[in-house]
Image (cartoon, rainbow, N blue to C red; front, top):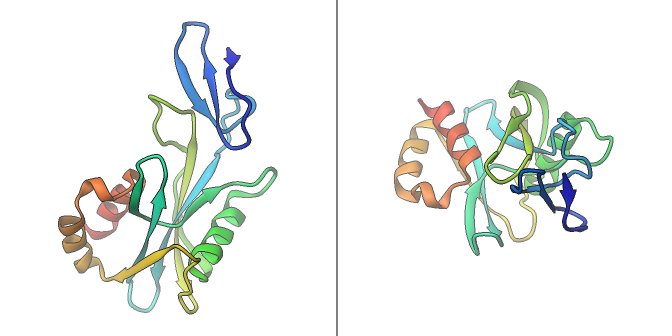
Amino acid sequence: MKKLTNKKWLNLFETNQGYLFASRKNDPLDKKADAVVVVPIIKETNDIIMIKEFRPAVNKYVWSFPAGLIDNGEDPIVSAKRELKEELGLDTDNLIAQTPPILSSPGMTDERVIIFFFHVFGDITPEKGIEYKRFSRDDGIRFLKTHGREELDAKSYLSLIFLIY
């Protein structure tokens, strides 16, 4: 395997068979998670909170759940709580569920993501450049129909489907 680029956040590798893929790791054989996704659920109402932020790769604003990279040596649950606080200003003291590290797009990257489902509390204070929407699970069905699959991150789309059906 050969590393073709040397960038801070993402690099291109070529396998011995000539296939190209992107990796956030210096060693793509490392199977640890790279990133976290946080599904915030307000305990008292079971309302769900999604965010909308600009994604350069698709040159548009996309609905998703708070997410971010795991810092070197950081526990993934600490990363998840940090991202929740940074992006929405919320806290949590109740982990509902989490996935194992799952491959986000194995046809082009080795990125592994852990999805955390948390009950959250506090005042929503979104990070600059982030729009948010709070809705009930019933409203989630209408949200999926009106915002279409193209405007939703795939991990968030599937997490939302899981919550509302």
